[in-house]
Each structure stands twice: as C-alpha cells, then as structure tokens.
Image (cartoon, rainbow over all chains, first blue to last red; front, side):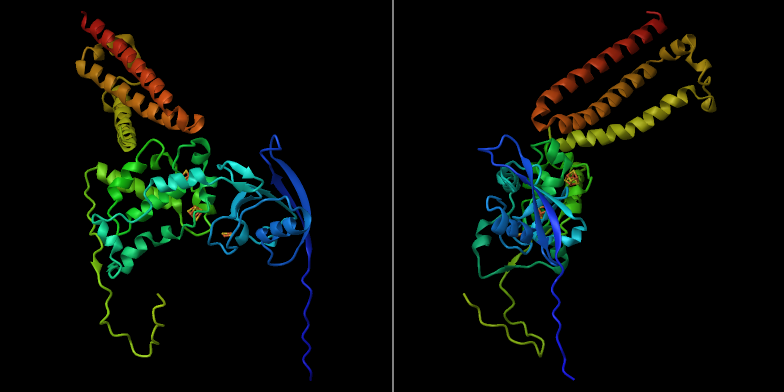
Length: 281
Length: 119
Ligand code: SF4
Ligand code: SF4
Ligand code: FES
C-alpha cells in the first residue's frame, strides 16, 4: 500500500499588534499604532515585528541580533511584562491583541529601541572582571585556574546573565531611584565576588554598600520573575547583603584564592573516549 | 557613613524597641506589681516614678531609639518615592526633625523629673 504523506497547511490566526511608536525629532510623545498580521504556530514576537517591518511598515524600528536568546538585545514590554521578543511565541500568549512597548526604566531612542548606556555604566562600575592580587596571572596563558565543581556552582547560575536588561526594567526600585545600581549590576558584583579565581570582593562590597546599592532592594523579586536565563538576581542581592552583614558583625569570611597550575597533561583518559580534535589556534 | 552601618543600626534599634516597649508596658501592668493601666496613669503615681533618674534616662533612650528607627524607615521610603537625587536633602531634613524630636522630648522628660523631685 502506498503511503501518502499529507502536509497540512498551518492554520493562520490574525493577531493585532498595538505597537508604541516614537520618533523624538518628530513626535511630541509616544503613541500607539495597530497592525493586524497573520501568525502561524511557532512564530515569535521577533518574527512578527520583522514581518511588520518587511511587509507593512518599514519605518518601525526595533533591535535584535542573535534571535536565539543569547545576545540580549531584543527585550520588549510584551502585554506589560518584560520579555525577550525572540524567546516569546505569539500564540503562547493566548490573546488576540499583543501590546508591545519599549522596556521601561530606559530612555527611548526610537520606537522599541532604548538606550542602554546608563545600564552598562552601572554594570561597569562594579568591576565585572576577575581581579587577581598578581596581575601577571591573567596573562599566563599556559596555566589554568584550579576550581572545584562545588566552587564553580557558587556562581554558575549568576554567570548566565546576558545583560538583556529585563530585570532592570521590571525593578520597582530602579523605577523610583534612578541612581539605584539595579539587579543586573548587583548580581554581577556577587557573581565575580563569589568566584574563587577572584580577589576583589572587598573592593566590590564597598562599591555596592552605598545609599543606592544593595540595601535599597526590598526583595520583591520582580527581577527574578522576568529573567529569561534563570539568573535569580534577587537571590544574588540578598547574598551580597549577607556578605556585608557578616563582615560588619566581625566575621572574617575565609576563602582560598584559586591557584594557577599547568593543565594536567599526563592524565590518562578513560578507555573508549575518542581523542579531541587538534587545537585550531 | 557606609549604608550598612545605618542599616545595621536600624535592625538593632528595631530589636531594642521590642524590649523597651515590653518594659514600658510592664511598668504599669498589675501582673508584675504595677498599679494597672488606669490607676497607674494618675499624676501622682507618674510623678512618683519620675523621681527615679533611671526612669528619666530610660525614656530619653527609648525616644532616641524610636526616632532613629522611624527616621531610617522614612528615609528609605522618601528616597524611593522622590528619587535618589534628593537623598542629601532628605538626610538633612530627617536629621533635623530627629534632633528636634529628641531634644524636645528630653526637655519635657527632664523638666518633669526635676518637678517631681521638687527642684
Ligand atoms: S539577570 Fe537576567 S534579566 Fe537581568 S540582565 Fe541578566 S539575563 Fe537579563
Ligand atoms: S528584588 Fe530587589 S532588585 Fe529585584 S526587582 Fe525587587 S527591588 Fe529590584
Ligand atoms: S535577539 Fe538576541 S536575545 Fe533575542
């Protein structure tokens, strides 16, 4: 019996997109414009706005790059909740009207594009890099740092941050206190400080222990709710507070700095494990 | 001053307040040998207690503790409400208000003590 392959055409649904538009040179204030477009299963918000830009209104501006949740450039306020446009499927929202606005807590550049300058400055201010007592360690490329899997787990979750700014746009404290460092920068202050390769914790604690630092967070957890990478900034901020409080109560948290060592060349691999390809650089 | 110092003081004063408030209630309570809440509040009894200098000192410390705790809480609310750029102004305002409250309260308490011992 012949097997007939039936390829069904995907059902299309018409969804209305209410998109906030704003051109600072031209418009006095932002306004909404509606677009009705056909959506099929699997289409993301990013696909939808790209569709609108290509076929309906080429003046619509938005920012995106990787379209796979890695670059952190496509954050939008989707029906009132900060989300990555490329990681949100339209039909998953279960509604026929989708409202798109630029992320709050950021100045608007145009339409859906916001200015991340202040956000990145705050990130930079907490020294988001490994600090070694001996700087030459960093250029010693033949050696590697010895870190146990347990030590790795102390900061792993926080290192998944892609700097998409969703947490920053959801945070009520950032909304009211423009000088607040924000969940992203505070989390990175913890992420680097909890890394055993790093020796900068005291420096960073002094940076975040100010009237607009970690003590302003009241642990509402909005940041954690919206983070697309499962980073849990609210947890990191409480851990920062704990580190500071422990020191203020006189506890001397002791931690050994990860040592540099040559990679274990002599180690014998288990049998049946294929050889890695030769190094390409 | 580092923010954590202010924050720690907030927590410490919070704990102290629980203790002070308990002492404050116990002073009148018939359960621990006081005169009860109605009789205990007569002028004569109050002035009798005010003769004790410890009593006067206790209430001044109590007042200072409440003032610090309340003002730190207010400061947090105001910084959030008005925005971080107002922080300096808020600090100055609250320090002045706090000092006024403690000074005026101490003046009243000390005067009452002096009146009670008959100076
Ligand atoms: S913590 Fe999460 S929400 Fe915040 S910037 Fe990083 S990835 Fe985005
Ligand atoms: S938990 Fe803290 S940082 Fe996160 S949203 Fe709430 S106030 Fe902001
Ligand atoms: S486009 Fe890169 S995260 Fe969405």
